[in-house]
Length: 114
Length: 114
Image (cartoon, rainbow over all chains, first blue to last red; front, side, top):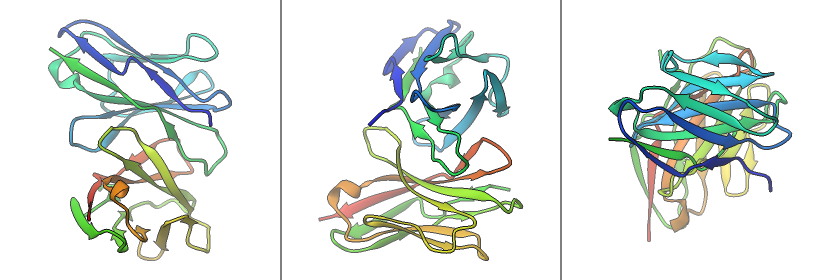
């Protein structure tokens, strides 16, 4: 069964550095998402992406964050000038596009800011 | 107001017994979807079951069923014949069909006792 893949599984970065989290959504899916989950807390929506542009974003998704679909398969989340509070699990998800389809999640990237 | 409310931070159930995990939602949209996800200790998010707002019958998927009470805006997950492998966090989520974002609850931690 096709799945969403995320790399790396764990990223350790110094505060202030830039980090890029990578995702390969399921190939025939049209909607892509990034979520964040701080340890032990709820899953928080960051951004959704459709037709090569951001369709919705949350208050968390400020100028520090950006997303890109640089080619036909990858979907990346860039965090500039990382802060300690950016430490979290970051999940990528994709959805086929039919109205009632669930999102399928990747296994996540655990980001640790030192 | 919270879009999704899960009032049970932790639940215990005896193996082979049934358990109900509560979820209430808040929306003024007529068309929406409700989803349940399982997050084991390994961290991945696993889609379990979906209920559409216009579905007249409660959704079922193997040992999972969704007790959908539209007037009360509740979408409780029922797990029958609990197994040790069901021990995990369970998240209720909603997507309003006017948007792309999925809203998640704070989750319920289920522990199955042998």
